[in-house]
Structure formats: C-alpha cells, structure tokens
Image (tube, rainbow, N blue to C red):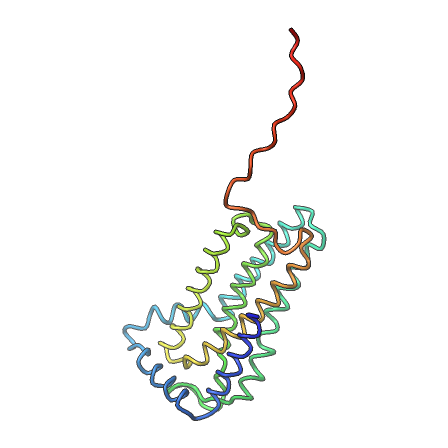
Length: 228
C-alpha cells in the first residue's frame, strides 16, 4: 500500500513539475522564501553535500562491507545477498533519475544551468537510498536495529537527515522543493523493494524483531526428590 501511495505521489509531483501551473508556481515561490543568503548558507551547503555520491557512497560501501563480515561470521546462509541487493538498489538510482529528468525537463533554480533537467533531485534520491540501504543491510546483524524502539528511532533519524539534506539543496539554490519531494518518493519505493528482498532472504523470516520487553519467566523445572 505504501509503495502504491509513493508511486502515485511521484506521478503527481512529476506532472506538477512538468506543467506550468499553480502548483509549480507555488513551488517556486516557496523555494525563493527558503533560499538563504550566502553568509547564512553554510549549514545548507553541509547537508546538501551529504547527498552527494562522494559522501553517501562510501557510507553505503562501509555498511555493505560490515554486513558481509558480520553475516559471514554469524554463519548466515546467503550472507552475500544483502550486499548484492544493497548495491543494486543504489545502482538503480541513476538509471531511474536520468530518464525522469529527461522526461520532465524542468529547468533549475536561478543561477543553475538550464536545460539539464532537475526533477527529481539526484542528490536527494542518492541520500535516501544510500543511507536507508546502509541501515537495512545492517539490521539483521545488529540487535539494537531489530527492536521496535530501535526501528522507530532509526526511522526518525533517517527522516530527519533526509529533511535537512532536502532543505540544504533548496536553500543553496540547487533544486526546487518539488524536485526533492519527487526524489523522496522514488527513493522510498526503492527502499521498500530492498526491504522486501531482504525479508525474503532472511532465514528467520521477515527480520524477526527483538522485543523491547522481557519475555515471560521460564516454566518451573521439576525438582528431583530430596533425600530424607
């Protein structure tokens, strides 16, 4: 269901970005309000850089290497599968972003080279998939990432990071807000597919959760009769 919602939202944002209508005009006004001055844009530049391949790809590569090492040490069958699946998810990003950019053909904000296609944002999509895939491939090997509380905390942290990266891209004038939203939808769809593939590969079922609460005490054992 979530996959379908993201697909519909991606289609709607693509249409809004391609057509010169009220949504796109409102998007451009919002970008103008969010865009920071040069002296105030350092935080935006920092977070925008986190979405670049120079930062996101090494983070994902380290997570894939750690997942392979931990999975092999634990004796997991098909321990290599998360590495391959995570790498394929990341490789799919430019294969989908480039045709969408050409299809929508939206010019960039003022100061950016026009005619290159800016929807969806490649930086935002790279960030969503790289950091999200890093967490997913490590999830079966690190118990804190499998508890309900751990999943909630990681999801919130990932969402906040993506929000700051998206705001950084808009504040620095690299993308329009709709470019970022479309990239979030595309990246979210890829992460859902990756999670499904990893769930099916996991020999314990769909990422068996470790409970936050202590389990019931073990049943009492029959005590042997005491000698009199």
